[in-house]
Amino acid sequence: MDGLGTETAFEVVNRVQALQKEGRSIVELHIGAPDFRTPENVVEAGRKALADGWHKYTPAKGLPVLREAIAEYCGRFHRAKVHPDHVLVVPGGKPTLFYAAMMFCEPGTEALYPNPGFPIYESAIRLCGATPVPIELHEEKGFAFSADEVLAKITPRTRLLVLNSPANPTGGVTPRKELDRLASGLERFPQVAILSDEIYSRLTYDGAEHVSMLSYPALRERTILLDGWSKTYAMTGWRMGFGVWPAELVAHAERLQINSVSCVNAAAQIAGLEALTGSQDPVERMRQAFDERRKLIVQELNDIPGFRCTTPKGAFYAFPNVTGTGVRSRELETKLLQRAGVSCLSGTSFGALGEGYLRFSYANSAEQIREGMRRVRECLQPA
Ligand SMILES: Cc1ncc(COP(=O)(O)O)c(C=O)c1O
Image (cartoon, rainbow, N blue to C red; front, side, top):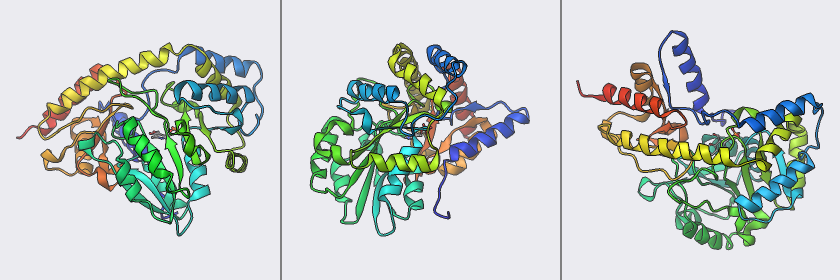
């Protein structure tokens, strides 16, 4: 258990709530959840499912009709032909990661993961006893992966490669050219399974293309796709996610599910079905709103002395370099919360390589973003 990390976002939530209880006004820019409500047609489908009697266990892998819809969804949005038998519906994005880590990570093996990156990758790898090997992401490259750097880190002990594009916390999107290069290089390392976390795949901007690792036929027998409803459909609290597993692994993943959570809430699955098969207009409306806020926050961050922010191409996070302030990231996170009433996350919440950065979520209104940036500027003004 000592190896288990955490997502400090959940701790910051507690600190923010404690300050709010004292009457403090906090501009919340730490949250990795859309501020929108789940689209109404989806809420209604969930409500109706409860009224209609969806109260029992479902098959562990998920309702067949939902798995068929997910297979169709993968054809549309990941450009990959997926058989419904290979789909496992899970409670959120995280279980797919944990099941993959339990299968491939054990003492004596290594697993590659992005750094700065979603903190649960390193945590799950460590918990299962493997050695986590960071893939360094660089600001100069827009925090995209470099295929050559990834390939250079593979050793005979490497069993799992975790990829994430568009990425948390950086908003980096890895371009097709780099992924093509990575995919062809990986053919030399058949012992490496790939866990591709594409939970932000529907949130790209400036024409950035999302390329799914599932779309590389040569890697299909060892690629696991992690995706879900949380970010795309503003459904973080519903706990709905799915994995697409290679033929050889899906029965093992199903067993892990039976051993742990049995199945996903039945009514939530019906709501998830409506999300995938109903109008996609709400997704586009949310994306456009995020896009506008993205432009606003990047401009505002670049106006703050000591801050320098590259323009993220995906997700809903800005990841400014704050080394110009001369203050370490964690200290700055605390100072901004305590003194300015603005919550954000230290880059080090996402790995050691996040030192010198802060993560601001722009899943909040333009007014709140403006107010937050005004407070940060004022707080950091030289006396
Ligand atoms: C990159 C990434 N993967 C997975 C998840 C987990 O998603 P969920 O809340 O659906 O478990 C998150 C949530 O923040 C994330 O940022």
